[in-house]
Image (cartoon, rainbow, N blue to C red; front, side):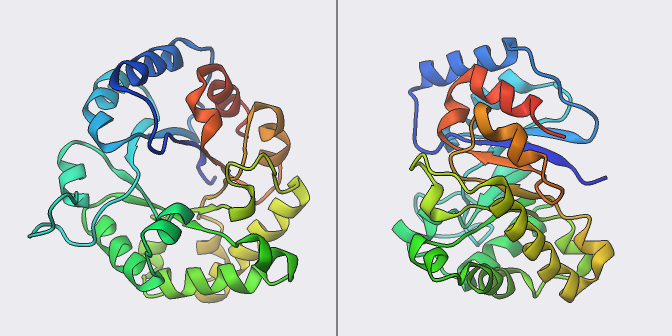
Length: 253
């Protein structure tokens, strides 16, 4: 059975006191995480020690980084490597979020290097892909996303690709309040799985968790997650509200 995952992306939000309060609220809310499920909290880098402390000892709950550098060490002032995160016990790293691609000009080739770095640190890449509105309106979303995946991930072995989590995020739905319908989400998630099946075989493709991201909230999570190829969500704004994110966790299959 594929892992069902609710991943929170706090982005660049909250003071240290607000972060501590939110973590305390999250742990106090009523949510259940089954054996095949995970809750992952991608917090700002400086809050990782706090989050690690607050979440320690909890079953299937993990702290993630929102980004990393492609090198393990070196003269890269201000950067943090996957190896450094691993030394803190952080084993999940978000890569290729559309905001990183747009604002920091991260290319598919650079993300391939980052993916290699995360895997080399024995960690799990949460690899983001997704199309802008113009591509969706032109009906070219499948080929656009396929190119992202091929350019960044298709150099990996079958064993390595099963260690990657995919997060499909239609850029036009991130933070806009717009959400792909459950049918739209299923359609492209199924296509993404077929892309991996063509390269690695259906058995391998069926092991890869594919998350949906884009204005996921408590009100729509259950319907979206009910689709057969949707294995959870990467959640932005709603993850900053404890009761909302707890409900999203409870909406997992």
